[in-house]
Length: 523
Image (spheres, rainbow, N blue to C red):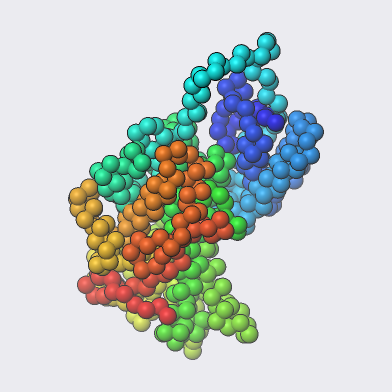
C-alpha cells in the first residue's frame, strides 16, 4: 500500500513538500515520518511548561490519520511502533540534554499548524491499462539515485565554518577532501569521483536542520560524513533517519549516535566520550593512585559534556562495585562561550572546604578555547592539578593555545585520542601526511583532520565493496560486511549489524614543555 503525506509545514527532520508534488510513499516511508513526529511529541511530553492537552491533540491526530488510511493491521502496527520509537527518542533527547524545551515547543507548534493526514495514492491512470512493451524492448532505466551520477558521488558535511569552533569544521573538511582527492587522482571509486559539499551551522543546533536541508534537498547530496557536534547531532540524526540518508563518522562520542541496536543509517568511527573519560578515570585511579573523590569534572553544559560525565560515573562504579557511589564535583561552562568564572569559583570553594582531601585532577569534556581558558585561570591557583581532556578538544589547537600562554600551562596536560599520533610514523599516518602535503599544502597535520581522513578511507572501502550499482541500502550492507579491515592504525576496523562503531581503542597522550604530545600507557 502507498500513501501521500499531506502536511505542508516544516518539521524537524522533515522536508517541506506540497501535496501536488509528492511522490507516493511506502509503509516504511510513512513509518519514518511517524518517527519524526514521535520525536517531537516525546520531547514535548517531558517539558513541564508545554500543556499536555496540546501534546494529546497532536498524538490523537496521528492515531486517527493512521486508522483512516489503512485497514491492514500489520501496516498500522508498523507505523504505530515507529511512532513509539520516535517518542522514546524525543524523551531521551530532552532528558539527556541533547535538545531543549524551547526546541520542543517550536517543533510542536509546527505540528499544530496543519492537519496530519495520510491519503492513499490514486491510481496512475483511470483509463485503459497500459499496453505491454514489445517483446525484446529495453527495460526502463532504473530511477536515479540522489547525489550519484555516472561520474560522481556527492557527500555533504554540516559543521562550524564560522564562530568559535570553526577550526574543527575546517580540519574535518581538510581530512575528507584530502582522502577524496587521493582516490580521485587514482581514478575514483568504481569509475566515479567523490565530492564533498559543506554547509555552515556555526555549531548552533538552531541552524543545523536548515543546513541539512540545504545540502540534501537543494544541493542533492547522497549522504553525510563527519558532521560536527553533539547538540547539533540531536537535530541532524533524526533528519538523516527520516530521509534514510547515510550519516557516517560524525564528530561526536555521545549517545545520540549510538543507539542499541544501532540506527541502520548511522555509523561511527570514533569511540564514545564515555569510553574516553572512562579510560582517563581509570588511568588517574590506577596509575596516578588518586581516589575518585579527588577528581572533578569540567564540562560543556549540554549533551556533549553529559556524555563524558556518564563515562566517568560508569567507570567509577566498575572500579568500586561494592562501595558507595562517588559524588563528583561538576563544573560547567555554556556552549560557544568562555564564561567560566562560576566553574573556577566552584573549584576554589571546594578546595577551601575540603583541604584534607582536595581535588587533584580535573577530567575536562570541553572544546579548545574553553579548555585552555580554564587551565589558564586555575594553573597558578593549583599548580599541581592534573588536567585531562577528550579527543574532541582538538589536541593540536589546544597545544597551540597553551603554548601561547607558556610552557607551564601545557606541560603534563593529558588528552585521550581516537587516532594514532599525527606526529608518528605509522604507515597510514605517513600516507595521510603525504596526501596532505600534496592536496592541502597549507594545512598542518592534526588529530582532527587525521580522524576524518581515516573515516573517509573506511567509507571509500565500503563504496568499493558496494559496486557500481550503488544506493544507500547497498552501501549500508557493504559497511556491515567490513570485518577486521587493517588500516594500519594498530587496531582492526569492523562493523556488524549490531555494532556500528568502527573501533573501541583509546590512545593516551601527554603534552611536554615544547607543546608536543608524547604517548602514555593508559592501562
